[in-house]
Every structure is written in C-alpha cells, then in structure tokens.
Image (spheres, rainbow, N blue to C red):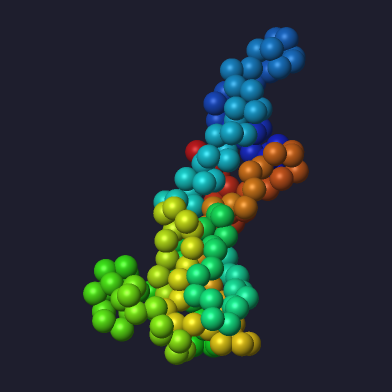
Length: 167
C-alpha cells in the first residue's frame, strides 16, 4: 500500500471522513499527523518483531578492527568472514579472556569473533585483524532507511504487514 492508501484506510478505521463541508476543515486528524503515526508504527513494528532484515558487505581494511554500522541498525544477527561464520563475543568474555583482553591489542591473527556496540557508537569490532582482500557479510535487524513522506512512498516492511500499521 502507498502512503496515500494507508492514510485513507486509517481515516476509514477512525471514521474521520469529509462530512458536510467537503474540505479538510472538518477532519479530526491531519494527513501529517497520520503520516507521523504511521512512520512511528513502522519503527515500532521493527523494534518488536525484528522482521526487517538486511545484508551488507563490509569492506575490510588490512589491520583495522573497528567499523561503523549503518545508522538504522537495531542488532547484528550474523557475520560471515571469508565464507565462514564468526560468532559474537560479549564484552565480559572479551575482557576476561587473557588472549582477548584490551591490554593485549597485539593479536594480528585471523578474525575469530566480533562484538558490537549498537547502543551509542553503533560500531562493530572484530577480534583479530583482517588481511588484504578479506570480506565480511553482515546480516542485521534494522529500522526503515527513510520515513514515508510522498503519497507514493510505501513502507519498507512486507506488504502482508501493512494492515498492522493501520490497526
């Protein structure tokens, strides 16, 4: 459904129709207000379900462990490094493990795992340093890239869930 179709459907559910006047002066809710709530609903849907999943190739620089995550990232699901799955490491296990401690920053072997800081810096740190020509593919839950603004814009969530935005 397009944004305009969603707005019409919301007006029908709310019984917010053009009555006697035939213009926007008798509406309870403006299009802008409904659009704002639809965009919030789409973000909330992503928060609750984690349904919107994207995949992105990370261009790895030799000797660099820290990389920025996309701004709309909710959580990283998995990372494949040179066609093998690497596992998430918690900060606790990273600090308590002798070979992964922050004091031992000299580890230059192959990437073993990763950890994320999605809360503030939105970054991913690989434990180990990538070599030249290495690739990583990250799957992650995310928010929509952009809000719906134009009448022809459509939600990024799958079409079968558009009715959930109206309800």
